[in-house]
Structures are given as structure tokens and as C-alpha cells.
Image (cartoon, rainbow, N blue to C red; front, side, top):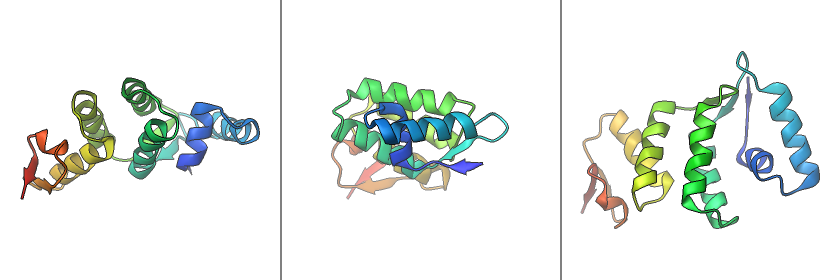
Amino acid sequence: MIGIDTNVLVRYLVQDDPAQSAKATDLIEQQCSLSSPGRISIIVLCELAWVLIGAYKYDKKLVVKVLEQLITTVEFSIENERVVSKAINNYKIGNADFSDYLIVNSNKQAGCVKTYTFDKKLLQHKEAGSL
């Protein structure tokens, strides 16, 4: 198994830098398989969503689709896939950032009854609490 950093995943998905995109594509397509998947951490997924929305100006619906495809791709092993899947579903219908939903769902899995925040968008989530 290999680990995949955000910049490699971005180059693979966006294909915007010919030299780096070619290297990322070769790495992922040659070394990631069902028997030896590439590991994608929660942090990489947070950064990926942030980069696609912020730097590349992708629409949220497209970012959701990318995230959903990543977690269903057998050539990738997603850290805490259950939490990620719930966060994607929250992000799809909510107004907060993807990373905020990951925080709430990760905390819930760890036994937290609420995640307290000042983020007004996240406060719309039933498991977020205001101070």
C-alpha cells in the first residue's frame, strides 16, 4: 500500500500540469489496485475539497461527486470511510464546509454528544452546538 498526498491526487484528478499529472497518473494507475490500494487520509480529503472549491473554483456538486467517486473506487483505501461517507452526505445538503462535517462526524464516532462551534453554517447541523 502507498499513501497519496493531496497534491498528487489533485494532479491526477485535474490534469492541469503536464509533467506532474503524468507522474501522478502513472503512480496511481500502476501502484493502486484492489489488492494494494492507495491510502487517502481524511486530511487529504479536506485539503482536496478546499483546493477544488477555492483554487479551482469547482462547483460544490462536482466536489461532492468527486468525493463520492473516491470512496467507491476499490483502488483507494479511505481513512475512516464510514465517517467520510456521512460527512459527504451532510456536505451535500448542508451549508458548512466539508471539513466541518468531517469534524462533527468524527467527534460523534468518538462518543461526543455535541461539537461546539462558532461557525454559523455548521450550527445548522443537529450535532453542532453553540456557545
